[in-house]
Length: 399
Image (cartoon, rainbow, N blue to C red; front, side, top):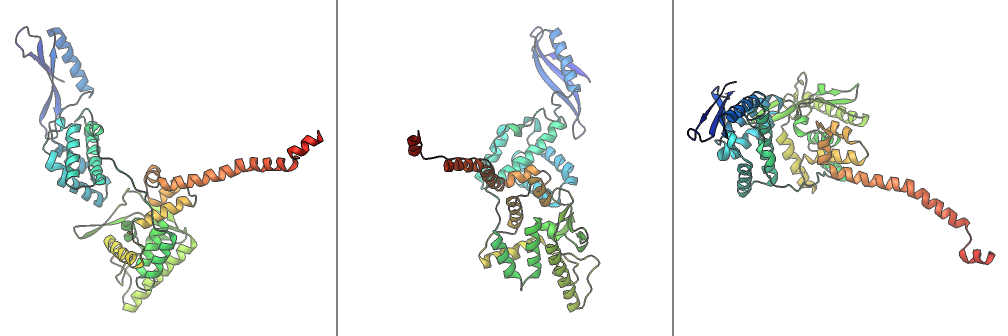
């Protein structure tokens, strides 16, 4: 590690410029860390030695001279192997449309919390919702955290910024009666949609995960449904990739659901025979093609469900079936960790955050049960004692 100093205020001024070589930036250019110092030459030399040690120990930022845009490009490239195609598309669109035009050319070491607050304010003024602005804040926060790890920054300015608050709405789904009404309404016209509604409401799977299911994912012997892939459509091209959390999960299915899935398989086989084709080796569970080779697309399920929901007066969108599975499970007494595993949440805290209202309702029921168990016994004893004690007036006469 090399360092130098010179007295920039003239001989005897005691004003020094300390300069330390700090490696190379993302473009392989040499970078230097500079500090101003006031004192004697011996004090300046001591400060320079300390600065060299701090840089070697990476206790100060080693300004890499790149821009916010450089950081975001590097961060997106780094996270791509661990994110779904859909997530990467949304991240890139957010960065290109709303972040780069405003602060993309700003030098990274000059980015402040004020720049971020101004960015958020401008996005709100252009009509973006608070939730959308917070998604952009999450992108910037993650990229800037990576910059700190890489020693491109000493601290994360996003931690000091003030994104807009968000009034979270309870993630509720349709009632059981509404789900049954939807199934009955589609029973004769669209057996594929019926099957999608049933599996979404029982397994809590996302629409892309449902569309990627094949018959080989059904384990009849173990009574499980394996969810390991998700279907994503980007620029009209359907692609199978990992699930949102890059995790594979086996969802339990009972005998009733197994019988329903078996009926769906028989319907698909009957359709192929009627048309005069053979099913492909491993057909998609949700397919409108006679041979099962072409999966239903996520947007197709969404639109079909929306039309059905409007027709029946239920309203809402397909994703609410996932909320139904979660809230009904929690209300039935299932623990949050089990529900999180069924939904494919990487962390049960995500389930707690989204469905806190359902947990609170369950907690109120538990409060009633405990109160009845503890205070109910006391009340019963009190009433029993009263029944065996003579009235006050009678007791007075006996004395």
